[in-house]
Length: 202
Figure 1 (tube, rainbow, N blue to C red):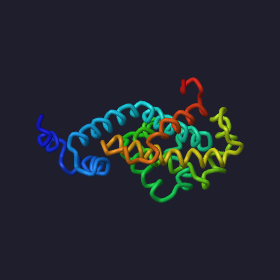
Figure 2 (figure 1 turned 90 degrees about the vertical axis):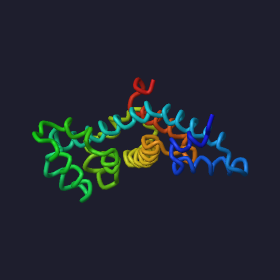
Figure 3 (figure 1 turned 60 degrees about the vertical axis):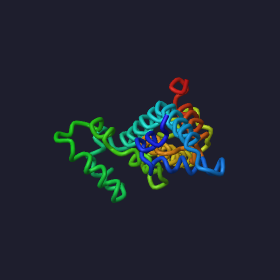
Figure 4 (figure 1 turned 180 degrees about the horizontal axis):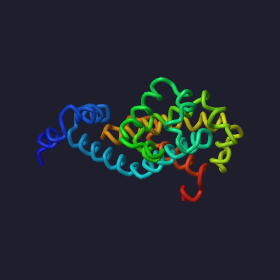
């Protein structure tokens, strides 16, 4: 087997990270070890696809429900909600709505908005408007270990940021072995889903 041909196929620039990791481990650039690490990285990333998928769908739906709870089913085109958004959040939402030639409902818009758009609404600024409104967060997370909506929302934001960054690395086939939370991501997802719905977690 010609390792050079394999490395060229994968691209030398992409593979350099794995060669560097092999050198840190053995003291020399070890192509065979680097290839094994590349395979390991791809395998572990693929195992994360399902939990990452579930988490992303969960977060999109959670935030959408919170907005609807306050602003109604047509929140993507509600001027009052639009007014609460930061400039880049507003621009992202308006651009996404405009791409829909004939707006019908929020279900058109939710899957088209970027993951980070939903994550960025998990802020203190939205506590009163969204997360505390009609006790939304407490009702949405019956198994939450946190006593206040603020604590739960902050934990959701911190974990969502970590999970999104990790998800992006997996989606773009980037190395994840340097990610400091690689062993914790599944646990973070598992716990959050349980807080929301024990059946879904099972």
